[in-house]
Amino acid sequence: MMSMPISCPAFRRTALVLALVAGGMPAFAQESTNQSTGQSATQIAGNQPASEVVLIPNRVIYPGETIQLAALKQVTLIAGKHKPDAVATRAEELDGKIAKRTLLPGRYIPSAAIREAWLVEQGASVQVFFIAGGLTISATAVTLQPGAAGDLVKVRNIDSGKVLSGTVMADGTIQVSAS
Figure: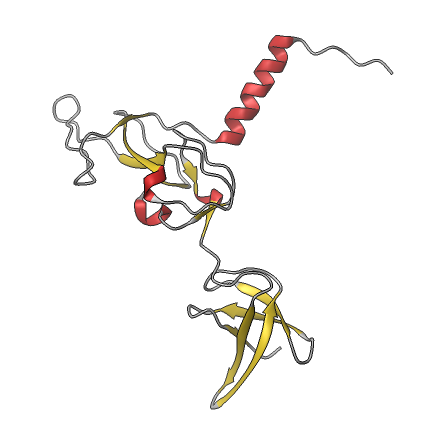
């Protein structure tokens, strides 16, 4: 079986396209000079308002890594440029979140590339509660998947071995409903 040779320019072009698609869109920005107030004090050409200030990675952030503000750089978008939809660019959207994929320096961070930190880890022992009116039943279970507050996760009751689905509560317990 004979394969066709790939020309070097065609290969480079394909690799560049894949890198741009996989790496996200670059942020068209200039570094912000006023980081103490968190806002840009620069006026652009006469009566135009100051450009938008956003946060982007200043180093590679790897999957599973907690995003900290020290790993982000504040930049001001170039006049006339606006951030695309579905990207996280503010401190409250990013601080303490977990990267789901590699985040490259100088690129926007897609909202789909970050998640909340897990409140319960897979394989952890947790308290499970069933509440109906004045009746409360509690049991110990092992989580079969990780989850953040509000996520629906599967757990296995340690005593019966039965698999249940429940909602992760803010205190790390699981609340199940009648099924």
